[in-house]
Length: 143
Length: 149
Image (cartoon, rainbow over all chains, first blue to last red; front, side):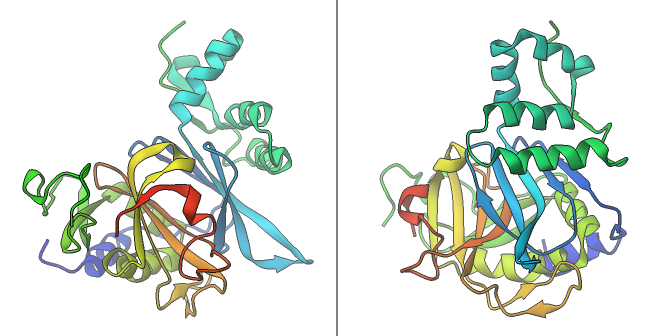
């Protein structure tokens, strides 16, 4: 690549309109993950376990950090595990797609730490019109 | 010195090129010279959609840590990824995602950049620094399989 990396990034960014619409959901095949952003705030990451990293705001509001988003990793193996343990879960993965809100519900069942944060995320995803019907690839073979 | 379980520099390409991906020079943990790390076009577009501030951070701060990290680790235990790389350090600047303003690095934090075993830039974020070693992430002794640089 003859142009600098900064030029490359900025040239691509120049063709994309920055969105003021949040939440945003980004699905990545490279890392088998989904990223959820509730707001545009600057954030830092706190890892809970192999599945969930929560993004918390760099600044405080009323003495508290706000949830900015989350990174959920190893989704394929998690969905397979859930489908094995609870066969009924497979029926939520219609047409190879799993509603994001159901993924978060399932994570809250398995999570041992900070379930409150996962449930808060789930509530936001389930009630916001941008995300309430959002699905992610489940990659499960048909039942 | 090349650790025994890393490939010798003769067995892989320093330069990478893949359709739908751009590349950025980063320190090669095998020999301390440079190699290419890829980033998908789709990822750059998602970052641009998220915010100008995050885009500028990628173009500036992330590049800086990839090229001048304080440490590089292999094997990210928390992600169950034995071969992934994690570049860590404190860049000269951070960017406010809301305002896109350049600012001082977030106090008490370091930047961690995750690169897959296929040398694709997976993600980066700021995280709490270790109490004793301010340029390394908290729990750096247990989070990673080994330090390679």
